[in-house]
Amino acid sequence: MTTQIDAGLVDEANQQGAAHLQADYDHLGAVLARRGIDIEAITEKARDFAVAVPSWGTGSGGTRFARFPGPGEPRNVFEKLEDCAVIQQLVRCTPTVSPHFPWDWVDDFSELRQHADALGLGFDAVNSNTFQDQPGQPLSYKYGSLSHTDPAVRAQAVAHNLECIEWGQVLGSSALTVWVGDGSNFPGQSHFQYQLERYLESARAIYDALPADWDMFLEHKMFEPAFYSTVIQDWGSSVLCAMELGDRARCLVDLGHHAPNVNIEMIVSRLIQFHKLAGFHFNDSKYGDDDLDSGSLHPYQQFLIFNELVDAEQRGQAGFNPAYMLDQSHNVTDPIESLMNSAEEVQRSYVKALLVDREALYAHQEANDAMLATNTLKAAFNLDVSPILAQARVLEGGAAQPIAVYRASGYRCAVDKQRPSSGQSGSGIV
Ligand code: AOS
Ligand code: ZN
Ligand code: ZN
Ligand code: ZN
Image 1: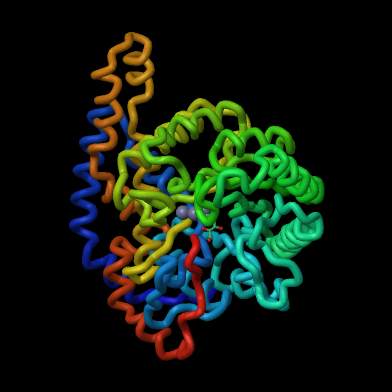
Image 2: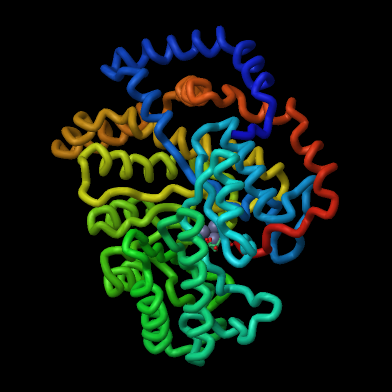
């Protein structure tokens, strides 16, 4: 397997920090032991954790006003994978990449798969794109795609999704994520029910064509690009459609796609309860679909979501197998740094949720002791689990301090020389 960063550099940095890491790890181990928690078992769980990287996140995102590309941005999916391999080499919890078509379209998908194999990467859910028109595309998505009033546009959008499945099969993927921007910008512009009926008919055509081992993930979003109404605007519409379609259609939760102040962890619980949780697009948000770095604003919310996920995992909830993916737009940071940091922040939430004393929590809930119940969650959240995360990375062959090693490697500077005409990847809408 090719490594992107000199393995000697990683080892050297790890050795330099080894004594301090061991001391911090031992101290945390003693704190956890007093709570009856075996730090080694938690570290094992951290080592098993994985979150997929979005191929589109490797370039600078931009807003609808401007995009400011950084140096050495990947110019095609092969180069995006190389950047993803850097991320995986250093953090060791991002073994898969979620591709987006047609942005990541290539002539030969087996060649792309070989490239990924050589870099030690696999593929997660494939994303279709019927929210933009592509050069040479016969019919426009200006007034919608899967729910368009014109059956010919709907057929074109369905056909694209079927192609995405075919390409994804070559890549070894087993899920299709469908997010559509379909909706309306003016009251009266669209008939809500007819529009949703048309969406469902198209979604049914895709669902019926799924290979036996594939799932379909429906991603809701409240607004943007449609600013008055959106066809799959919230988890209610999403779960209704998923129920209509069948067991293999489930709901994907992008953290930035809700109305302000919505209780996302409770939505997650509901979806788990009814076997309808597909997975996540992790990011953070202040105003809307901001696609900020995961855990950068609301780490407690992200922890509370993982509290629900770990609760389901530990109860052995039937059919519980969510897909974890990042979906972020990096405007002012090096995307590789943001993706490494974000993967760690998601892993951090998972590890903290593992530390919740669940028996105590259930007992406080039964006794209606709101104070001790909430403090039980805080007792886990307030612990700094950084030594566990670093130890897990080192044991997996990654870097204790990924960003420091990445900066020391000079990778960005090197690819800047190899990728002279960069600046094409990414999009305004994410
Ligand atoms: C759009 O807002 C959604 O988050 C989708 O997941 C989208 O496909 C992705 O963000 C790339 O633009
Ligand atoms: Zn998303
Ligand atoms: Zn988003
Ligand atoms: Zn989004």
